[in-house]
Image: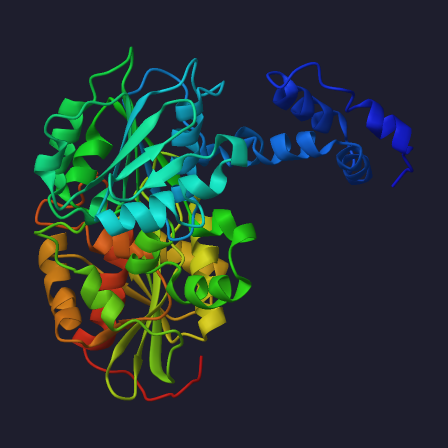
Length: 462
């Protein structure tokens, strides 16, 4: 790395003409430092005032998902995992509008609503928490918290009132310019409190609100996600890894990544089950294993597409095994879309060889002898068991779903895309209307292993 003189770095941070344009000038100076040593020297050349202002510039440090969206919106819904920085994003937005700080606001917002699950949550998280409003202000601009009045008062006259989701009637009467609603998926009277808040957002030229929450498929969250006036942003726990304890990432994130709970609480995904689906996520999660026990028989099932190309259905490729105790184990999902026949055949054979499987179970309704021929061309020695569908997908899937309900099937590790398909498969198929190729392959694999008789005993450790 080339050396840089202190004077050169210092020249990039010259004396500030005023407090108003200090932030913009500092940001421009840092952008001009194209290497780390220049950045370090430029920081050393800053005055204490410049250091304070630099730390205070949220637009410089925030991730894109933590910044308010552009455009004409009424509600900004930030769905985020645990520790993803939702609270900091909400607090910084309120701070910027209370102070009238560009580019977030043209002038201060005088009346603000802070709504949490309980009053204790508003106080402990939104106001006094480590990312709360009192912590993120510079001393000269810091508001005063008056617990007896449940009010936060800024030196410039802006006032925020605290409200609890346990008391919808408290929102009758007050009026606001902006609002911050935290953890709305946990609110006790969510719909009523939200509606009362909307009636109160009637001050200023363009009343706005931010809602920050870990998602749950509750009616209010689902309604906001579907609302065209609501802009939805998503943030994962891993996106905020720099500010989280390494042990948390290694243990909690590593343990739950890919499960329904992990996708909801860590990735900020809104995950729903269909009421009429054959499979349930809680059943799958409850019996999930981190590693497979020894298997007596393993198969790789292939549900080939009728055509090839980017618009074709996916080629379902799922591996499963059965243990000495007769329990089925779903081992891998190698399903892929847009592959040519020789490519999906090679993919299936590779999984077969990796797991030292006993057979390739292949549906031959689409392509018949051609499907077998493609597989034998790729690997002539691999035993191929052709199967033909004589009943509809729902009827074929029902006996396999019953195995899950009886607790006779385990998923080994997270298989998110496969599980999404299983838990979205109802009497009329998938909600998207697409072909359930992963599910089809799984059904063929477990049918061959558990519903059509057993193969030779051959115990392997995976």
